[in-house]
Length: 266
Image (cartoon, rainbow, N blue to C red):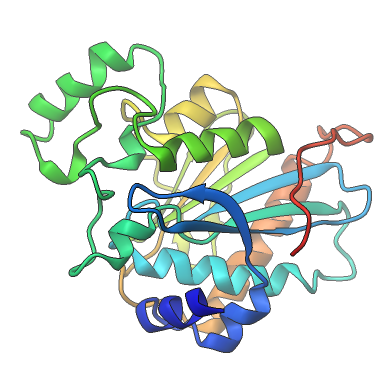
């Protein structure tokens, strides 16, 4: 798979074998420059919970994509004592154009910060004002001319609408904290990352999913954009996420899962 050679050359701590084992599926979505946006579903029979895990929404946060690849491997061999089965949808790199730019860039190929491009309430009023007044027109945080102006953000919205996740996990870097938006009691920690809710932003995924749509959004901020945590730490974060998800969301999930649109395996 050609993309695995490209990914392993760019993403820290992702060897070709790990990428190949992820068995990425072509979502049929394309970035601004026509690059595929890959995904992978790991399904559990009769699972009442669905979790969407996203990395690389900012192209220069390569460690976020790496963590998703490592978690795909862990999802394929779930602990035998998991009390509530979970079906997963992983998107390792939402912004491949930003990641493969030289140098890698936070924004996509049209210079839009995808994490400010989601249709939160009052986007037209708030997004540009925030960009001008709070970021002082920082080009790394340009929200675009209108919500969902970018194919990458439109694709993610389609995934939320079709997959109907009970939880969204968005992986970022490099602030080294854990953030949370939406209903439910947030996790206090994942591995060595502790909860530090930093607020919401116009057009952000946490604002759109957690506040507007009522789907809990866990935002992971890894400590480094260019280096991943140790293997044991990534596993501990995974186990902590499993524990919190089943304890906090498992009891409220329907015993008869919905029928989200799932792509066929290649």
